[in-house]
Image 1 (cartoon, rainbow, N blue to C red):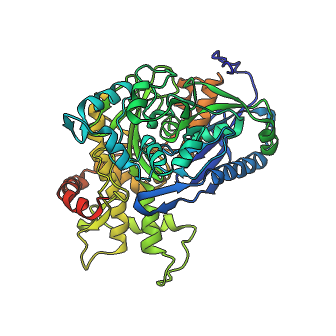
Image 2 (tube, helix red, strand yellow):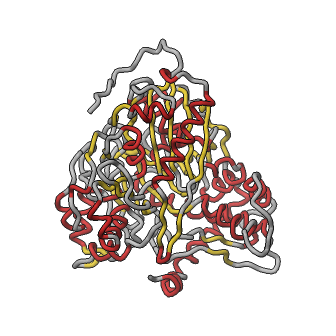
Image 3 (cartoon, rainbow, N blue to C red):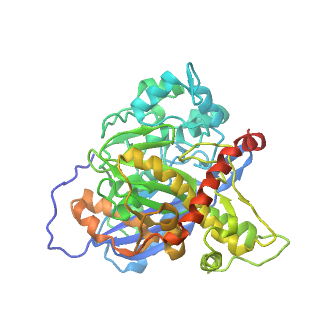
Length: 536
């Protein structure tokens, strides 16, 4: 294992850079980030998701690797930066996505995606017991929470559920699997030739020991409960570790120096907090990319099983971060545009234009606060935080003959803001203090309107991050600079700028209080209908 130098490097140096690679649900973003946080070059590549019967969702890891290399080469070439000035490669990625690989790191099948719920029945089988509590056997539930801070989801949308699905329905793949990997660890293995993971990246598998920050052990008790073999899981290295240098062949292909170090991977939610400058404890962000989540760094381990909130080890020593994954976020906008506005069908409205999101924002701005009573339910793949219901589904409620596409567009924005307000209360109780403001990042933060809607719905100022679309790659790069000793955590806090602060418009408080209350009622009153329509 490569040892890190935790001493600060001399400040008198030319600019250094990190090649940051972010794998989101919709695709790759690669960027070359300077040590002042400036993105000097970036490129993106799409990734396709295969939706299958019975709740299946998969992506092709071979496509990941092809597109990661393509985007990385484009960034290095267009930047004009000398290879010796690029000190590291740092990867972050989507999470709860399982890739089974062989001894050479080659994938044995498509990756089972976080949208996939086929492992639900197998999760439910291993968590049942007496006395029953919210579908769990109490003693099993207490053991999982004590050892990992998490518990298997009923929906099977976690990595444990995905592995159980593979074991039960793809037994030939399970038998051949050398290791199960999350995407960020798959990428670092392809970059270095070394198959590893960390306590923080293995958390969704719920078989690693999380009671103490920095543990590098798997739990025999949890492996036995799940019926899984320890040898199917990768070697654990420190949370703040370095995997090693680039493979010479990869360095040559990417145009990088072979001594370039590869940092242990990180989840995109933690990368977005770092890239938003929220490195101090309790500084909370809202992120809307493909997914939707609320997170912050915290100095303790804690679990709120009722609201599906927990703390995950961070790469910063003895620190954790709030894991509040709410499910699909910006994917709701993409769904709306693809299926209602620019469908590829007999209505033939034409292909989606390059400025489709700007048009969506303009249309939403033409409707009043509250969208004339129209409510959008964003649970297109079930609800997670703050109330798990794998049978819940999305929809527009309270349409009338006066409803226009402007109302529908704004309702989509408001629906996600209502879910953030719903999450805010449990999050405040979790961290033990009121949230005085949020940093808003991800593609959703490009919209001034969406920032204002969040300020009005949540009742606190929203701080719009400058250059929000590069939040995750900036965070992955900052992590590399910190771990290599080129930057301190305190410096990172001041390198991220706030573009604008949006304060609540009190004139909208009454309508948004009303709409939010009805949003909650729609979830509660439709549970039986959701179950009748969608129970597998």
